[in-house]
Image 1 (cartoon, rainbow, N blue to C red):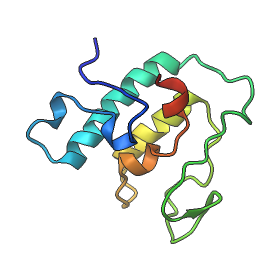
Image 2: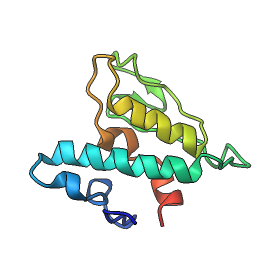
Image 3: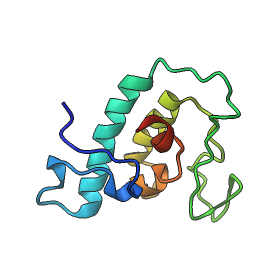
Amino acid sequence: MLSFVVDARLPVKSIIRGPDCVGKSDDIAYNKGVERLIDILVDETKNVKHQNYNDYSYVHSYPNRDNGSVIGGATCDRQLWKLDCWSCLVTAKNKLNDNCGHTHDARIELADCSIWYKMIR
């Protein structure tokens, strides 16, 4: 049974709340909650293969991006993700704790990913 509530009608930062939030800063608790949610979604979607990649091609929007092109020197970020749900989620989770020298925030990594709206209802 899930220990936190997911509500796709709410803004991304508001949809994850759980025991990890108690006594910690919002950002740390939020990222921890995202990791736990991603674990669940990875397990549930790892065998999903989309029939039409054009319908499930995710361009993840970043503050330093324009139509998928990296600007501002953020060379560690992928320019365009055209992946199935499982790959997209695994990549997002891995990027939360990568060692490329940039700070990655789950709000940036997942905020505009259509997975939230297609998979969590």
